[in-house]
Length: 475
Image 1 (cartoon, rainbow, N blue to C red):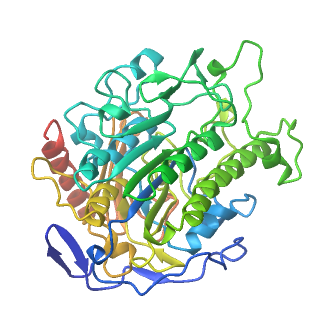
Image 2 (image 1 turned 45 degrees about the vertical axis):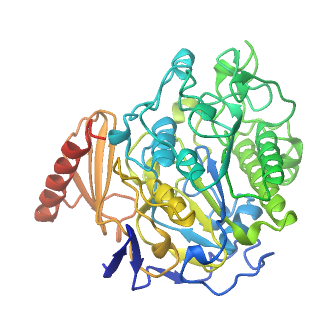
Image 3 (image 1 turned 135 degrees about the vertical axis):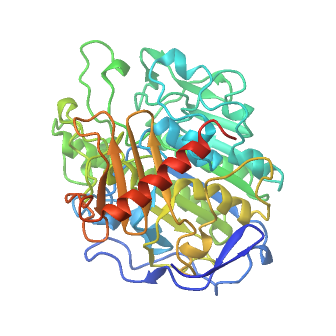
């Protein structure tokens, strides 16, 4: 670990934690850029406050994108974004399921600390309180620095009075309130799920494009002031039969042009082909937002963060073997690497060099302190953030600001990572003992080293138990 200097709550590194490297051979579109990148400056505050765009993808696996090695997928706009910024290889989400994952992202606090460590499944529960009202989320912080904030897409954090996006700091909201909906009708479990601010709404068109276009309109209206544009796409969430009329096939949905990009018929019943079309349409939605930033000449002063809410779901019994978390083990709702290690790309002209790779362990809770730093704000004094500003690590000037990363998924499983080692326990499995893996040599978590590295395992177990005791029910 490199030495770091702590200044005003932020870590300013001394050693490189990312290397400037070429991307995977065969990746499409990584050799060009529409941006110029000025010399990296030493202070975020020498420029005007940057805009912040967060694109939160749904259930996109570690191996689903071309720039992460999937040569069967067409994601040219995301690949180009990666070529213009830093691609993270060891970036984690706070929870392996979408609702607590969103709470962790927006609060900068671990699900155990913020009180949302479980998924709500019934539609009526989605209209109740999910994230406790005492929690403060990113737009509320940024408002203190003059930011206007909009949310466009999947909310999934409760929709009771006090829980809605506009109750929690967003100036406007347009999207689906629950965990998933039909991509064209916006139906969730037989009910309309689409809302504008607090009222039910209607829309025509494919949801990925509708949400991207709403975000583009927001960006244009607010181009002359600093903004936070949070776009939690509902793609590529798997299809839900409860969102369909009786007798209707439950298939992945995408526009015809996305199928045609591969030479597929839009009528194909091949689920893998249909899934590829969904991801390519998602890539198109990302491209619409990036094009808007270019058109309005905002890209140079906008931080763009693209990440997934958890690993792809791999459930053969439900036909969910279309996505890829390769080369990682398992997928969503597990604490194996396939459930929590996610694709993440950050573009910040003038701060992060293009075409770089960051191999430092980072986590989604880091985005809140990063945004506060970029906006010139101090960390909150009335609560603990589990995230730490990752800017120096992303820029290649330091190692990770985290000595440990921790996970607790309901009463199901627990995990802790320190450097190359990860200790994990599955409480609902036949083997409930802790297991130890060396992620540097065994990214697929195939060889349990607990017996051979017992001292390391015991140290990690003690650290995890101490942390869990500290964060549970403590603000």
